[in-house]
Image: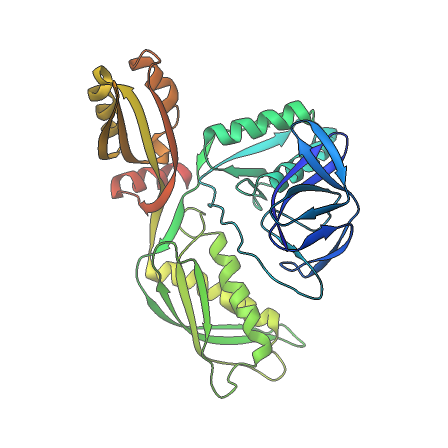
Length: 381
């Protein structure tokens, strides 16, 4: 068995999937991608030494090799024998916290940009690409300003794409303010076969980070089993478009406990539309809270600038977690909203004369203060 942990594009070989062998021997031939349940043919195995490549015929437990030309495998997938299927523990990647729009300058650039973004997202699982359905814009999402700057630079430099790039935007999230019990009916009759679906659900806000969960507790066949997946799909997909200002609604549970159907007019589509309407009604009646990404920030600064660093973090709605001596320097740890960290590196260099440095990574989502939420609604509505 082997785990794919990195994908990169080599100008001479093409796509290379870096893989670690955990058990057995890997040779040329056909293997099973047990995560996707698809077969992969391994034709060429390489041992990488910096920029040098060495062709090999076999790899053993503990080896790290690059496999050329895999079509279905992505980062975190398991390759194994078809006779002994196994799924190794997948790597967890954080959700993006910042996004910006990219718009190709010409039609030729549009084609090249599509290829570039597909390759870059295959290489980096924390980088996501989506399309805004209302504006048609391409949205790229990542873990911070620098992350997206590097990827946009690579797109322009390596793939020769000319594009206009929008200003970075924080990836806010929405959260249900309270649980709600709902009875929602979708009924449409316009000659011929109509549409009918009725569902009764309890929608409950979950723990932060719990994600979306759907439970089916229908008894007595009040809703046929074949319509249940459509109901789940309706809730899941409608939640991604949000309610308050268009950001995804996260961390909630839907419990489907009753409903009704019509022998002729009910269908999977009718129940999906019913669930979409129920999700919108839930958001309207339960109320929505706005959540923002909070970053864990560490600043290492000479002693004489410690007061300035702490004061600046406080002005950015940050909460100091602690300080720690490191030789002649001080390390300050704080939780700071991402929205207040734009341009921080230039400000930090300015008041520390370039002698301080910082790092940050996503920690959790937290509720936006009421006054800030009001400003955001006015700005983004």
